[in-house]
Amino acid sequence: MLRSMLLDRISLVMPAVEKKSKEPLFSSIWISGRQLRATNGRLFIRADLEEDSGVSMQVPGHLFQQVVKSASGNAIQLSQEDGNLIVKGDGTHVEILSNKTPSLISMNEVFTEPPNSEWEDIPSGFLEALSLCRASCSSDDALHVLTGVFVNKSNVWSCDRFRISRCKIDDSAKCTLSAIIPTDLIAETEKHEANVESMCRIGDSIALKFYDGKLVIAGGLILGTYPDLTYKLVDLTGKEEVQFPGDFSKALKLHNVMLRDTQEADRRVVVKFTEYGVSLLSESHDTGKAERKVRFEVPEGMKNVSFSCNPTHFAKVVSKHKNMVYSPEDHVMVFVGDKFVHQIKTTIVE
Image (cartoon, rainbow, N blue to C red; front, side, top):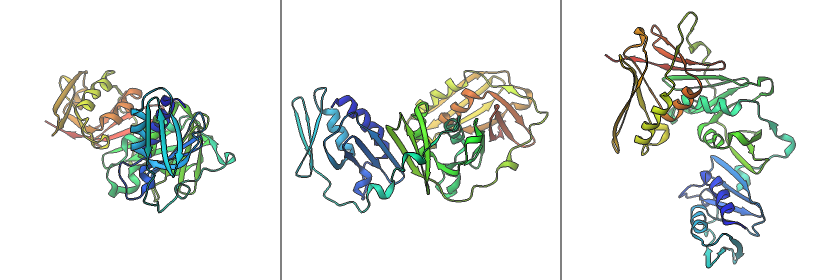
């Protein structure tokens, strides 16, 4: 088989492979015929190969990836001998020992794919709504249900202590799902959003198919009762909408560079409206400080207003929804679109 194809499929399942784990299954890739499968207990990913591998076994995932990367030649041959995986290339012969510690659970105990009849079409705008609302999810595990996105049929919600997002799904008639979807599952589906095919809820898990069923990503749902956020959204009636500067999302890229050593969920940028326009500031103990100013005619009532945001997630919001409303009595800034609302608590910084 082509080495490039095998590497591509390995890279697809690697987000579900732990570097180290007391449970061997969670740091392994299961090779079986034309399939690669992996799980870390939270995510399950299955990717199809273009041809039969000729083996059926569990191998250390990161080691397998590095061996295939380092092998010479364009073609790779896999075989199984005495329970070990043999990897052959042009001038390459590697024997990867099978895991000696038995797994306490099986792949099927983590996730079993349902029959084709149980899969449903994805409602239009479903994945985009999940991606946009991820901007307001909490990174604090103590808040539990707030670490995921709540799909309540046609309405998709998220919040933390400072933000609320709500997005309406375009084709609401087809969405009957009511569930809290974790952000790590959403992050993986975002990578393949344009090629999504169908989804299926199986008990306390949800799965999505991509590329005509050649890729499946699944994960456990967050269990619990999500708070009613309807009454938390401020009334914008009679308030003036302001067009946010168009190059603001580009300015956020600088801060992502400076915060590259900080985990994505923990990155923060302070946004402040000044006489000049909009000032963006970030600081990292590892890389230093950064400030970027964007020219913008700030309304008098918005001067010295400030809020913090995650540069990655907020860039998605402002790239598509540039109309904003400031409510001084509620101390919130609201970004609005036809089907989307993103509300942020603000402070006054003199």
